[in-house]
Length: 360
Image (tube, rainbow, N blue to C red):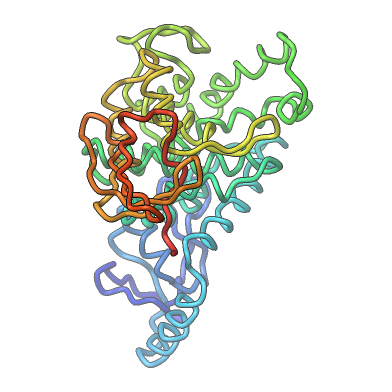
């Protein structure tokens, strides 16, 4: 069948790709004979592809019929949780390939994370639930996906444009790709690590950088961020013990996202913690390690609670947010539901918000 090149603005869901599509990549980002879905349209935009080769012989009626069928499927399929679970499985397969010696395929990485980034940037509250999706067995794969999404939301909050926000997300996704080069015996060990084993873990940013350094689509600033995402402003990080002036803001974005997700997740050796408690710990006990602008951006995201939001406290009491103090945004004024008592979390620091109640 004859090929025609259709502008993105005129491209409908249901058309069929007539040629493999490359975007400065070794492998196609989308293969020949793929039926175009809404996710593919997002991929075209992300790679700045202006025209797409499709089969000319496909009639408008056929395209419309296929589009209708796909719309029905989309109504049934693409909840965030389902897209997320599929992305985690795809990423896990890529990680296993890296363990076997394969190179990082940046096109696949983008395809895995982009649909999720789009959804999270539209609704930041999704980041509250990421720790609930994780599990100790597959923690590493969940962590890479979640770090990417939290990094994207922080970048957006800091005012970076869409292109850079996507780059930051990919940086977050690939920051721990070097863990594929750490022996599973060390990586998955449930008992305390020895000094030698810790030394091997501390090398994973170096391994990650080696795996991404030749990727032409990834910006140099993001490769540097991947290398530095475990550095800390006070010099306590690794692998080089860099300090303030030498650590990029993108490394700090990924670092804060990395720590936030890790501390809120259930691990083999630790139970899950509240997002609100963790953000306070990062802001207070970890003060001096992270860029305050990045931490404040995350605080604004986590603590952006509209008046009337129903929350559960650490003592299992439920209440309604009545007032948010800008000097203590994670500790609003709460009206307890059972008694009507006003509870000021900024004055009573024994308790904290454990979770937001979305369904009463």
